[in-house]
Image 1 (cartoon, rainbow, N blue to C red):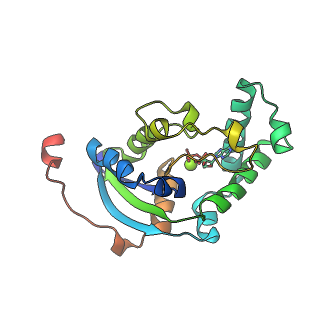
Image 2 (cartoon, rainbow, N blue to C red):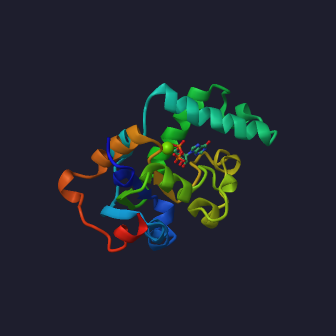
Length: 196
Ligand code: IDP
Ligand code: MG
C-alpha cells in the first residue's frame, strides 16, 4: 500500500474558476496546506472527454439525484416541479447532461496533487458540492453562494469553481484520463522533511 503522504488526486479549476481569475487562489490553498502539485496544464475539454471523466453508472446518478432531492426537501421545494421526476437516477442523468454543456464552455486547469491523504485533504479544502452549504474557509465556501435551487430553475449545473476526485477509484481513473505518465513529475518539496 502507498504511504499516506504519496496519495494522489485530480483537481480541475472549472471554467467558472478560470474565468473568474481563481486559478492562483486555488493552487495557493493546496500548496499552503503542504500538498504538492506534480502535474499541471490548461485544457479546453471536449464533451466526450467530460462524459468519460464523470461516471455513467446508476450508483453515481443515484447519489447525485438523492442529494439534490434531500436538499430540496429541506428547503420545502418540490423536486418534481424542477426536474419533472422524483427518480434519483433520472435527476442524476440530467445533472450529467448539464455538466457536458458547462464543462466545455471554456478551458479548465487540470492538476495532479500529491500529499498526505491527498484525496480527503483536498476535498476538505474544496468544501461541500453546493457552495451555499460549503463552510467559510473552503474554496467553494469563500468564493461562491451558488445552489441547486437556483441552478436547476435555469437548467444548469451548480457552479462550484473546482472539481476534486471523490475517492480512490475516481482519483485513479481521473489521473489517467487527464495525464499521461510522462506529464506527471517526481520531486521533493524543500519543507517535506520538516513537515512530516
Ligand atoms: P462533487 O463535484 O462535489 O464531487 P458530484 O456529486 O460529483 O459533486 O457532482 C458533480 C458536479 O455536478 C458538481 O460539482 C456540480 O457542479 C454538479 N451538480 C451536482 N448536483 C447538482 C444539482 O442538483 N444541480 C446542478 N448541478 C449539480
Ligand atoms: Mg464528484
